[in-house]
Amino acid sequence: MRKPLRKAIFPVGGLGTRFLPATKAMPKEMLPVVDKPLIQYAVEEARAAGIEEMIFVTGRGKSAIEDHFDYSYELQDLLKERNKDAELAMIDNLLPNPGEFAYVRQQEARGLGHAVWCARNLVGNEPFAVLLADDLVQAKTPCLKQMVEVYNEVGGNVVAVMDVPKAHTDRYGILKTGKESGRLVEAAGLVEKPKPDVAPSTLSIIGRYILQPDVFAHLDQQTPGAGGEIQLTDAMAKMCGRGRFHGYRFEGRRFDCGDKAGFIEANIAYALNHPKIGGRIRDAVLDFAEQQVKVARPEAAE
Ligand code: G1P
Image (cartoon, rainbow, N blue to C red; front, side, top):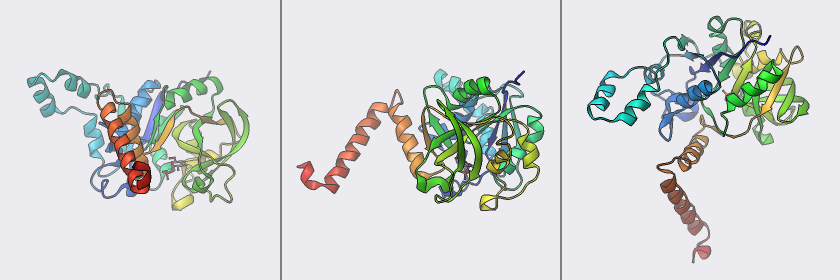
């Protein structure tokens, strides 16, 4: 029988160099989209997918993440005193059940594969998910939940995929595609960040994975790949052709929140959907766009 998916790894040890200076003293995973930090979206997505144990692979300077999911007595007392019930409930909902969260340190930033490997003893011999918090997916059914539904049917390894412009293949793990059926694509192979002229396709992995524990044996080899880092994609590539491995074209829109422009786009998209501020943001965005048209084509504005 297929083992159920109960555990998820959140690699949060990265230094966030693409987002300096904002991320000098603040973890990039704490950057807010509207009013919630990225890591909270990821945790909520994992909960919605039925994950019971969340493993954070963290590093120096990341303690704000642990604090975010812990009691804040002073704040809670103040909210109680001022009868701010809605805010209090919001803070209470952040608290994990005892034992639900575990933290392990990645002492050196040696790549995503190394970060995942650091969680091997906590994962043990069962399937697990990996969520990269800076890939934010806006979807009717949360991305990982969609993947769990598919995983329950096909088993094996499932990674979230989407097509990217050919010029961008060197930013992603890219699939060598096999048979396709609906939203599922067989992964015949995987390559980390290939140059566009040698990329096997434009179908790229985004930061959601459901993996079998065999991947740890491959990660044990610890061979640096693209960028001199230990790559998860390289370890996964060794599993292609040895068992089921699928890419899943998820439904929804992905924002690369590790990138300044992607992060702003995410904020606009989520703000437009927000019940309280959506209308105001819509007016502001339309107004900005109108101003831009006036600057670009003054005759059109007359
Ligand atoms: C990582 C993975 C890459 C994947 C990407 C998705 O790259 O190594 O395979 O396509 O996340 O966001 P990074 O963005 O950390 O360089």
